[in-house]
Structure formats: structure tokens, C-alpha cells
Amino acid sequence: MIQRLKKVSSNDSKQPTAKPVLLDAVEYTVRTIEDRARLYRNLVVSVSIVSILSVVLAVTFRQWIGLAGFLLLSPMTGSFLILDIRRTRLWRLHILKKSQKRELHIPTFRKTISAFAYLPASSLQAMLSTISDADNPAQGQAQTQNPSGDIVDTRMRESEWRIFRGSALLTIALASLTAAAIFQSATLLICGTGLSILFAFFHRKQL
Image (cartoon, rainbow, N blue to C red; front, side, top):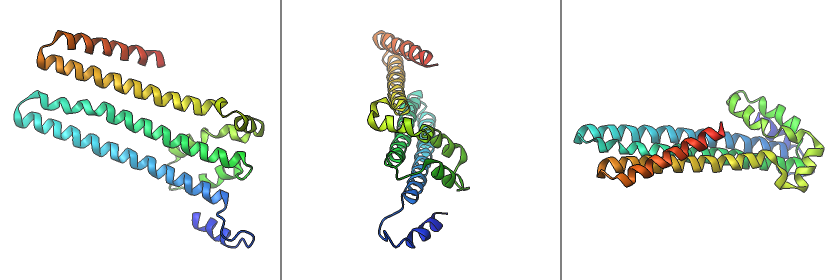
């Protein structure tokens, strides 16, 4: 499909060196999905390596402290989620910018990119759902005039912050409880318990 779009664009005698906006949007979308998939694969590999090494160290040295490596799973997962949301948010801003300049017709773009059967349908549809408001010219114009009023972008930024806060609280809480068990420290135990309660409070508040 991309090759077909490139072939059509090469026949355009008016702007022989300019890349068509539709082709640019399609290629950018494909790259975004590939980047997100790469992030996920890296997460799976990293989690697997950390988990295996933690178990091997604990068994080899017969010390449960080797399992402390599992503390890394929380920041690793949180980092993945933040980067994934941010990558999607940047893609959305790129597409909306093209649309708001009247260079990209969103319905045509959606129909074209949906024809790529090899792209993961669930990920693609989730991304396309974030630009559904762009089909409304009035709302698109309002977003152009007032970017801070972009509700979807605001919610995505808030999600990044919530994930960062939750991941940090959980990591510090678990680290404190682990350290409390190692050093027999009541102070660390109280600190870890308090942070765990705070994490549970924020998590329940988000539900």
C-alpha cells in the first residue's frame, strides 16, 4: 500500500520533490506502531532477564535477598507505559497538526491506514480513536485556537503523571519494606507501610 502511494506521488508533476501528506501520515503511523511494538518487546526481554537472574542468584547463594531484583519490575513497567503513552500522544499531535492545516483529510487517512492488514488492529483502532474529534471541523478549529483545551491530550498527560507517581510510590514502598526486613528497622517498616497505604489510596481513587 505504501509503495502504491509512493508511485502515485511520483507522478505528480506539480510538486515532484514534496511528499504527499497522506503518505507522510501513513508512514508516521506505521513507524509509531513499530516503535510501540519495539518498546513492548524490550520490556518483555528486560522483565524476563531480571526475573531469571533474581531467581538464579537467590538459589545459587541461598539468600532471598537475590529476589530484590524484582523491585526493578515496577519502574521498568511504569517507564514502558509512560513512553508508550507519550509516543501515541506525539503521533496524535502530528496527525492533528496536518489536519488542522487542511492538508490531511482524516476520514481518508483512517480508511487508508485501516487497509493495512498487517498492522495490529487493536493498537491501530485505539490510536485512531484519539483523533475522532478531528472529524468535526468546528472542534478541530477550536483546538487550533486553544491547544490547552485539548481534552484528550490533557488526559494523556495526566495518565503519564499518574503512572509515574504510582510507579515511584510502589518502588520506594517495596524498597523500604525490603530494607526494613534486612536491617530490622522499624523506621523503614513504618515508611514502607505508609507509602503502601498512600499508593493504595491513589490507586483506588483512580478507579
